[in-house]
Image 1 (cartoon, one colour):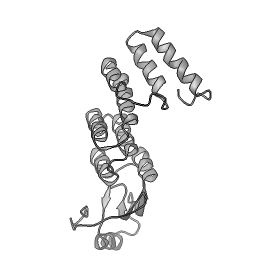
Image 2 (image 1 turned 180 degrees about the horizontal axis):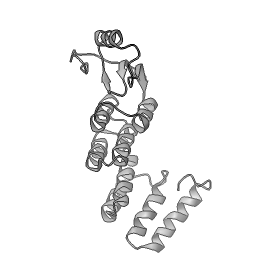
Image 3 (image 1 turned 90 degrees about the vertical axis):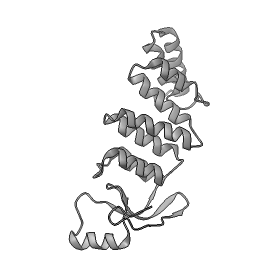
Image 4 (image 1 turned 90 degrees about the horizontal axis):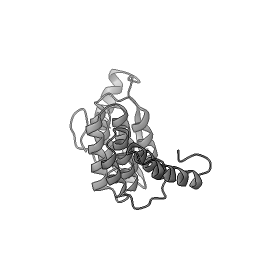
Length: 190
């Protein structure tokens, strides 16, 4: 990976599920030690700059979900997908953020990339089905649901029910919603 300021090559270490290095979360990018020193010499505690020496998968998901970025959102999401390559949670969080902010094409590209790169694909197929359903592309949404191997995962029944409702198949939708309610009596699925 290269420094976002001077392009010097930086080798990030990895310890368990943490990436180690100077991570500038909301640029996002990685700074070499010289650029970090220069930046802090110029502006003590620069506004909008969050520095971390390490970041774990949960922290990255949280950042993708909530933080405002200095760089364009799509480039920020791609940075985290590279940093945590193969982790479906990252692709999912990035795609949800992109979709929520109106970057629909980019959201689908991230999901498709995750489906290609991640070992566990069910959550990504499910998210893609949910996006397609929200856009009334219900036939495509059902096709995406066909790729979900574990149909007992959270939200599956609710999303399938909503898609079936969009197709006018109310009786089948009701069966899905009922199944989801029985699986999680605390209404966590819906």
